[in-house]
Length: 208
Image 1 (cartoon, rainbow, N blue to C red):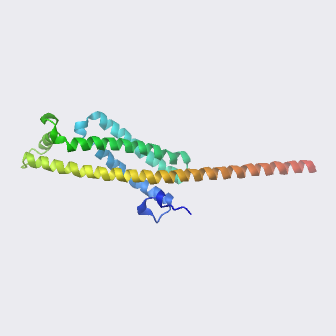
Image 2 (image 1 turned 180 degrees about the horizontal axis):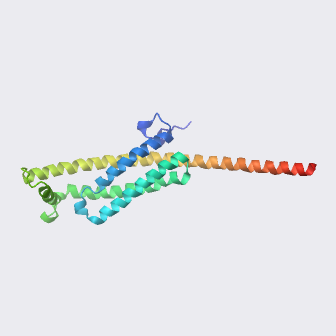
């Protein structure tokens, strides 16, 4: 018998693949909300356009997960199958945001003053905390640590999302195949039943 471990989250190995997919998808709703904020971690430098784009992608993946969860409950093939495509697109978008964020943060000090990421955020910090006693260098150091922590969190989030995509896609494909087989069996039963009814009707007519 083929192992089910590649079709469910390792943390829920003791559950059935379907229940594992259901629980991990609910957890993934929260992770995707977190990934939205990580995607726009330097939104002041990105601008309003990407903010709107990130929001659209974020809403789409949340809707996709909700539809997938409902599809699992009612065994609806299309609602289950759509998760693979939508989630793959969202991962690609999140990876693109990560690359932009990573390059900007790592090389943030290399730009001239007006485009220097840490100088810009230093001004924002001073505007929000006018009574601070911290020196500029201390504030910049604190900002760097914060951004580096967010980068690490972004990497972890992407890793979890990719793992979820691989496992869930394998599970969704097999589940959809099972739904097709059930549909074919049900169709055969209906067809055989119809033939039997026709045969019975013909016999009754011939007896009359």
